[in-house]
Amino acid sequence: MSMDSWSPVILLVLLVLGLTGFFAFQAGVFSANPSVDPHPYPNKPANLTQQSVGEYAKTCERAIVWNRELSQQNGKLTRISVSMNDIVVTNESRGWNLYIEYAFSTKTGDSVGDGRGVAEYFINESVTLRDGGDGTTDKEALDPTRNGTVVTNC
Image 1 (cartoon, rainbow, N blue to C red):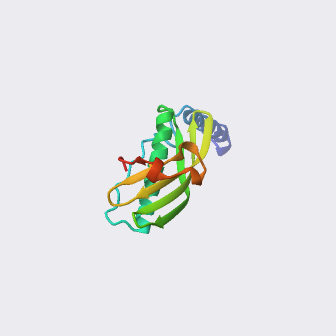
Image 2 (cartoon, rainbow, N blue to C red; image 1 turned 180 degrees about the horizontal axis):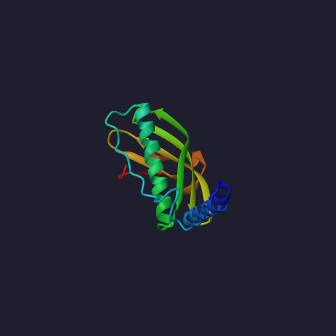
Image 3 (tube, rainbow, N blue to C red; image 1 turned 90 degrees about the vertical axis):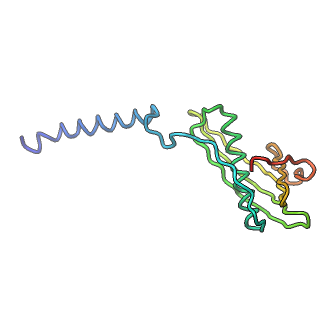
């Protein structure tokens, strides 16, 4: 058999393999993100510095937003991303105040959603307080020492 006579067979095999892969991907057999697992909560650092409380609060906020979105979608989420856009850390006599702006995007089936939010933390050796603002983007409305809840899982 000459090489020219194999060309239609090779093309047919490549076409079948390509279509099989395409339909398997569409059916979810092969997925870019096979599972969306809960995000772990961090432990509070032993030594509270500007850098350590900043990383701790960002990781904590990422876990809170990630797990909230995961819970709200009742396991139907196929993709999620959470990014911290801005963080301001100030040291006060009683502890650290942290203001965080974040964004997130989710995918459930063919539906894609995104959102933004802000949270403010107060952190010292004995407590972590968070005012998540419940969707607000108004920094002035946040006050973790008055309106915040104690963060027990971070």
